[in-house]
Length: 336
Image (tube, rainbow, N blue to C red):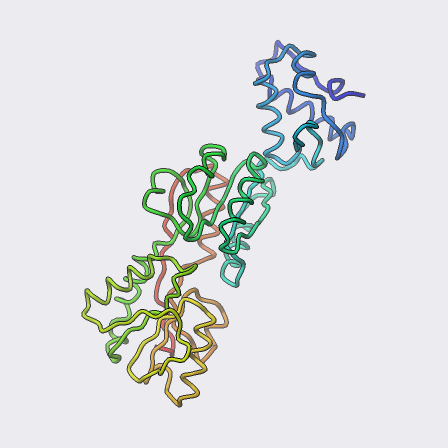
């Protein structure tokens, strides 16, 4: 049987015809009349059979696509992609990478979503080509797009292909985004500035602050906030790309956003018989359970990633268009 044999359109109903079309296909799937992989009649065939406009059928097909029920193959037509019709929303979630604290964010996000929302997670690993490809290949396949753009620039043409008002920015945002896209973000410049102020009393026993900033995936706001703090509070400071082969001296404080650099610094401090937290200070970024116990406790500047996931879930669930700042704080431990 053809797809049109399962479609019922009643001109007397006040329900929009595109919704009747969506409902007909869903009921056919529910009744197992349509199976995964089945070809759906063409738009022109459905238009002719029910005197519908092409736009009406396209709206119905697009809704079914965003919910993951339909897929289209260029030059061949539309097919049933999934027979799971219980999801009301299908979310494209694009992370930069997966690590301990991003996993906390993701788990919190999933815990706070209803079972009517399906999430597919992808990773771009700070590769701009992968970032572009993942978004381009998935345009039109999801009802909402949550994107962690890292430090990438100039992607308005890419975003313009996505459904309007369905884009959420996560973790890093730019000033020009604030009136364009909702989401949950960290204000890296303000966070490091305020965190260091809150640690002023402990920092004063040292003479120099050193920020390890490779200028790769780290947010530029961290650098700006660090420099502003040092200038405002008359600190001697230095910015280095990495700590390797560096002569670590007493009365220095190292701020290391990268965990690889953090491990190296702890090893070098121990190797040189320096006392961490007395001779040399050390501040890491992004708290994890391991940092609570490593080297008798590593001081961190960290946001609440579970709170970030919860806030993002609420935005999606309630279809809100707010931009929510997720603040960080200084968690003081023995390394300072």
